[in-house]
Length: 285
Ligand code: GUN
Image 1 (tube, rainbow, N blue to C red):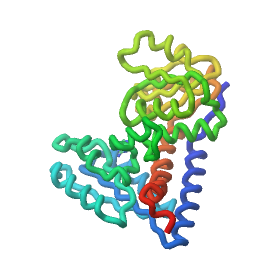
Image 2: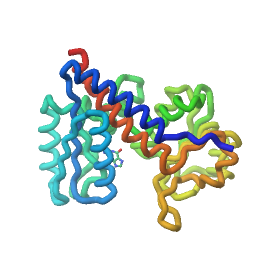
Image 3: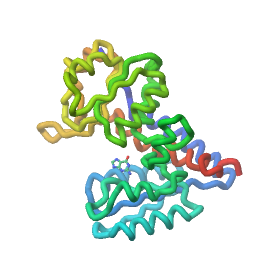
């Protein structure tokens, strides 16, 4: 029977630690400010942005929410990003994705000053992570590393299989697990015999966006199973990529959905906002 990895409790601890750091900075008259840009009215994005705002309030981070209409042009958005880049009162900039189709999201991310890229999506942040230089770590993968560490799951020398190769989760996850000295395999939609590959994993990380896809046949006895999925089952209920009840008896540890990886993403964003001060050389004042 699996140990349940409680992302809600661990994320709360990280937010409390961040809140403490923000309070200490505030005692030195240093403020932490995050600018969040939302373009259009995508309902899921609105929920994410609201959650980020709430977390900022909890941690004592000032949030500047900038809501632009869905018809905003790429030039207008780039001009706003440049304005925030130049504003010394703004420590972190986040453009909620996806952006509407008339805007090239990659171009906008490239425009964010790498020292304010709290999402860790810019090529500079990704490159720094790849070669072990300091920089922002993408929030979901960084949150998974925290889940593993704080749950006492050994990574050194162990087989880690990541399913999914997105820029936001799969690829940075692979880089972070390499830094943890795991033996890393990234599987994806073209992988032959996926079951054979995932069955080797001591740590299985799934990020494919397919409801309850991974049944116990994909999981090695005693494996730690980390589910990044945010999917809907046949009844419209929120679930992960992993068939939780089927895998539960076989896994050694497992993250539930909801309450596993999800809350860690926002917690790590808060953590990155405070890191931003260090990266900007502002925390020693
Ligand atoms: N859309 C879905 N997840 C994310 C995220 O972590 N950051 C941003 N900026 N947009 C997202």
